[in-house]
Length: 194
Image (tube, rainbow, N blue to C red; front, top):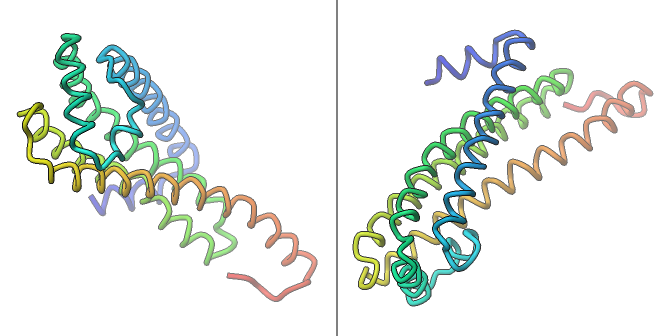
């Protein structure tokens, strides 16, 4: 895995761009498929509300609603489809952030930080996998699963969304700060900023 990461980081800009474009296409396609399946399951609340509820009674009510609607099987399938989406998030997130990190090559400190941020979405994907694993335990007994299961389930979801936020906000801040640092360095207003 480490060799693949290094190989991608050392690839030409053209090859990185091509792989990033393909990974983003996979991301958008899998996102669309996932959203359609989630909608078809008739889950009564948006997924981020459900995933961060920390409420086993509500979760059981939502499951009961889908069972009454005869869509619980579609929801189960949605959880399986989510693994395709997770893989696309991990790949596209890493590729995109690594490609953008090339912008910061002239500022080594920012370059290192951008390469660290390239792991934010893969970490979000890892927490999403853990969240899904717990969900299979709740779905195995939708009316009577152990209440404590919502604690790790929602905790993994919160960590997943936090990693998304770190990756997106961090990258946005870097993209805003870099032109200012370049301008200051070019005008010799400051000595070199790492």
